Image (cartoon, rainbow, N blue to C red):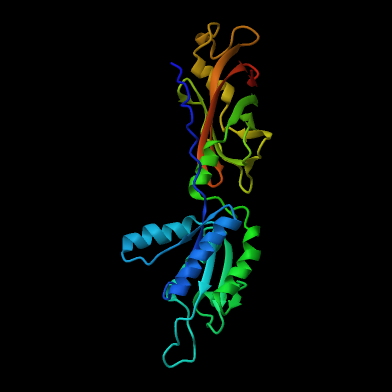
Length: 312
């Protein structure tokens, strides 16, 4: 049955990615600055700003702050004075904002999720915590107007994410299409050809051969210190050691040929024995750090006497 598309229904647009705004909320002017920065992000970048309001529960903290920071593509930090430390001539910043900077550092250096970053520190604020170890070019400021002026210059360069989020990487990985076919084989050596129809690179981690619902050989892996990459929009042959005579195994799965004489001690009657059989090539691959499986069934020609396999 065919369905007519609904007239006037627009496709659902993907939500805009966010830039996390870590700014004080102690004073009204600080909250107003955070909201202004949100508006600037929407105006000068393809993203939208997220300015977290005060959170009062652990669930709200997790869902509305930590998860948003983790999924963000950028971070704007505005550190205001939070008073002097008793007994020391040091003016500190918000402890919570320092922690958000630490989380962003973990994302970039450990989780390999780089962010666009703009850091603003009010004049006289001490460098504490993890900021002592970071090479961040902080902009000193006295008033919020200085922050706004600097962002007008900085934000237009934030045109693309520096990394892809988990959901987007899954969508990209799901869009990958591979064509797989047998090129040839001889005894233990087997060669397949993989055509990558997508715009994303693929790395083959494991190859398995199946026929008639049974394994033809043990799974094959890249040799030590070697890899099997299949670049985007490319066709690549991969030769591997099946660790088993593939033609012999396919001959067994195809059934005893009619001119095989078991009384002859395994001798074939006639000069050759050729047959066709379906082989399923199964790949376990990695696409953008996501594991994916691909497979394709093709018919091959087997020359049992010469232990040769040819893809059709």
